[in-house]
Image 1 (tube, rainbow, N blue to C red):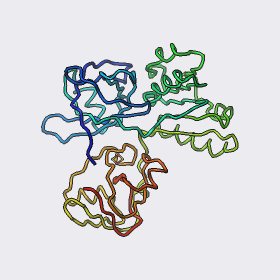
Image 2 (cartoon, rainbow, N blue to C red):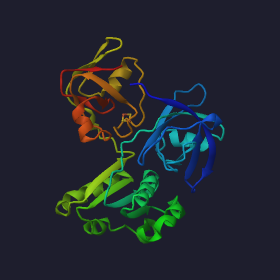
Image 3 (cartoon, rainbow, N blue to C red):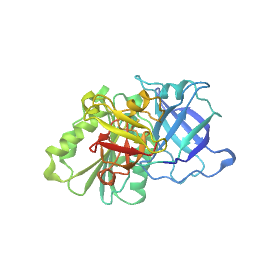
Amino acid sequence: MMQQILQTRVLKKTMLSDRVVGLTLGLDNGAALPAWEPGAHIELELAAPHTEPLYRQYSLCGQQDNTHAWQIAVLKDEASRGGSVFIHEVLQEGDVVPVSAPKNHFPFAANKKCLFIAGGIGITPIVPMVKAAVAAGLDWQLLYLARNTSDFIFLEDLQQLDRSRIKVHASDVEGQFDLQKTLMAQDGQTTVYSCGPQGLLSALEQYQQEQKELGWKLVLERFAVEADASTLTGNRFTVTLQKSGKRITVDSHETILSALKREGIKVKCSCQNGTCGTCETVVISGQPEHRDFVLSEEERELNETMMICVSRARSAELVLDL
Ligand code: FES
């Protein structure tokens, strides 16, 4: 799969809160950047000299109609695997950052009522969605949850759109939010869009099951899941790499990604838990068993691509475009 890579430059780096830095990226000479839709993310290639690059994905959270600058916000992750620390501590204004064209696994398509639920830094894809809902004249509400009052970013901007539709809740001062009660007030006209930590998204999935009769729909963006070793194992199968003709056995205890690494084959990856889409690989033949959180049901059925960090094979062989 050919991916468009843009050599962007950090135009501005500014702290949005104690733990979140905002980056504005643009092309030299003010050239136009590709268009994007609310929910889209870009993938940054982060590399100090003489080191292997890290690939990290961040939601676009600036003005959709600004074709000369992209804005992202990056939380300094306490459990950082290097990406957010690099952005906070190493990356400087003026530095060049290779960036992918925008991709969208979290498309916004509400046409009536929408309830946005953002958990902490999960506000980033929600910001352009709220603006799109305002522009479309939809009936929207935003529930913005955070652990600490100091974690709220973009709040003033959002409140200027319509303060009465926004509820903020910081658990350090107000305790646990009663999510169940808020969801009980929804109906079949409502689509809930949420991005946030795994605990929040799991709770939403559970309440949707429990409140099935209310009929509200749920669209989620995950930025992390805890790796569960049992989801990474399964049947033994063979992967054939189309470009080299090489055949590699993927044992029951390993993933396609780890089998490729074992054979010295380098492929791009980031999260390694099926949430980011970096390792998306074109399937030429064979039937994948999708275990990721990126592809939609429709995309899974097409079997055109797969996330090789977690997904396996239903067929004895997969031929991949590698
Ligand atoms: S590396 Fe993130 S989905 Fe595979």
